[in-house]
Amino acid sequence: MSGPRLLVTAAAALCAGALATALAQSPKPDSEDKRPSLGTRLSSLPPGRGKGIADRACLRCHSADILRQQRLSEKQWTANVTKMIGWGAEVPEDKRAELVAYLARNFGPDNDRFRPVVTRPLGR
Amino acid sequence: MNRAPAAAMNAVRRRTFLGLAVGAAFAPGTLVGAAPPGVPRARRRLLQVNGYAINAETPLDALTTYLTPNDLFFVRHHWEPTVPDPKTWTLTVDGEVSTPVKLTVADLERMPRTTVTCVLQCAGNGRALYKPPVPGIQWRYGAVGNARWTGTRVRDLLEKAGLKGSARHLHAFGTDRPPGKVPPFHRSLEIEKALEDAVVAYAMNGEPLAPLHGAPARLVVPGWAGDHWMKWLDRLSAQPIPQTGFYMDVGYRYPRVPAGPGVALKPEEMSPVTELFVKSNITEAPNHARVGSAVTIRGFAFSGAPDIAKVELTDDDGATWREAQLDPERDPFAWRLWSFRWTPKELGRGRLLARATDSRGFVQPREAVWNQSGYLHNGWHEVQIEVTA
Image (tube, rainbow over all chains, first blue to last red; front, top):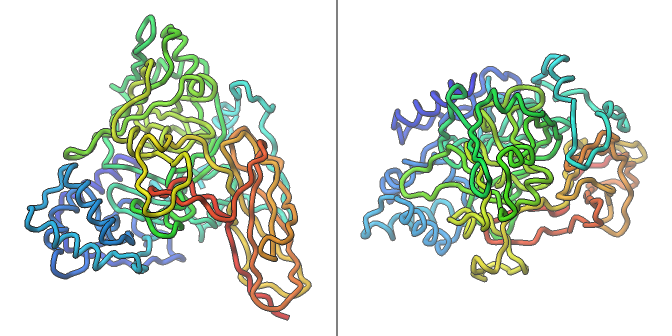
């Protein structure tokens, strides 16, 4: 796949707005063509109280992967949420604690569930 | 594997090393047990750690060639990039110069061409290995690669514009535009480093630079981490003072004095991430071996110094070390491939660890120095091999 096509694909995935759609695809090491192409959006956030806030506040600029791979304490999540609000994340003041609790509950220091997605080489 | 036509490869091998010349391209060296000629098809894949912005690393077992294939080279984006149209793109060189210039792709290609072969490593490569964990992309080993970069020396660009003596820093700008109120990704580097080594590259491994790697042109800063290698470059500005902003004053900074978790360092207690730390990784090792039968272990090593002096391995947790054989193919600030023959003497689980020493005498440490942003991890790399009778 060419660079521009890849960008179009990524943009299309972004515009689709299917925040809750998890396109779980198992990597198939022996069949390169069936692997997803780089930039394919594959993950969503886990269910639970606070997911809706995280979807709206975080997924505008990030795919769910960036959250799912973190292993942060509540203190670290608090600092990061504050930083992201400063950078434009829309989190109502009365929902901030709920968002931090959701992130700390799902992506705390013992989070070992994240696995990268095995993709085709770039441009294929 | 992306292989450029022979003529194109020969063209980009007309190289100059900015004062670090080591001669013509070396023929591929012969490692113990014969190095594989390319990356086998089954290993040709990327590990996507983020769907958007795109972040993907190369599996270690695909980092086995001197030049990392373009389509297997790691990708690190901050945001969805704004890729310039090469037909309308220009590179502006301004600031403390007598005659600001604006160059098109064709203008750049008409200027003297240079090629450097060197490592590009994301500043955060290995962040996932720090304990306790730190926020950011959780790279493990593969946000690194070695490539042949072709383009125009920054020195030539600055001389063309008439660099003034008042210039002390080179500010680099790209077309990348952040979302919301996120600060722009602007960087600068000392003018001496820019004049000595930096290149505005428009080709990678003999092929036009890909959009996801920064086309039409990116900055290449041999020996320094990727935070200075501005993609989608559109302006270089010579200035008396360093760049300011989040990504200079807060982000991409490393503590001057190690400080453990819980110590909140101020920006002035840290310095920008620049030179790479000496590091080696093991890319190939068997899962099993037999007592008395030698097996081959391979890897790469690099540093912010121009060369690697040696790579050593231990199977007794650092009590004794034996040197690996370095491949002869070398370039300043490129990685050295290495191989090592290991003959297990005992049954059970063998632990092999690798460490590199660079040409300055810097030795890779057992543990990387923990830092709050998880930069420049370079602790000893370990593999385990099950040894049977």
